[in-house]
Length: 196
Image 1 (cartoon, helix red, strand yellow):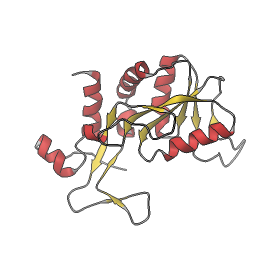
Image 2: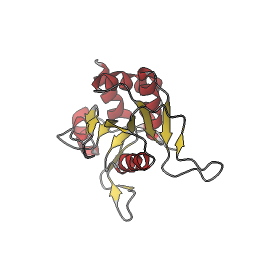
Image 3: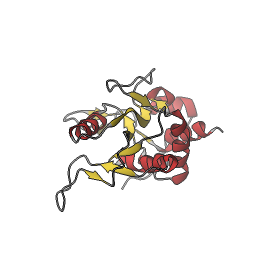
Image 4: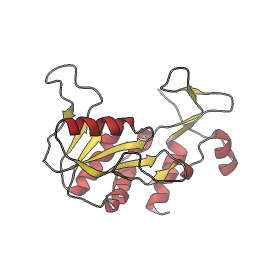
């Protein structure tokens, strides 16, 4: 099994929650529901998974003279693995400033290098957009590409952010997202495991 196949397999069987037919889980938007959802932290908190992902993503970067700015929370684990390979410190970008102490929006130290934004998923890309906007307002240079494990599109790896290149390993096409498609492909029910 190739390293990319290993990652895809882990996400397929451990990182996607699929609802049984006729059932749904609440979405972020009011009165909206999902029939499936990525839960990549179930995979990304495994060092083998995250290190494999970083090993595959870093060679795809056109510029490695960058510092990783990881979007909290899910991007932090992947960001650390990428930063280690780049030999540069990472910092995390908070969705909201801390409510106490310095009330900072960034956690870690900046090196002055262009910032490579890292997150787990590129869906609506609201987190990536707001992170880029915040860094730009702070006069911190943002790199010309950004990294996610999965681009939540079908049929394309196209980027959504103007003038930036998205580096990702997968799109939604790479997975059997619905309960029915999973059962048809693997001849078994999805086994997501317990949620606490």
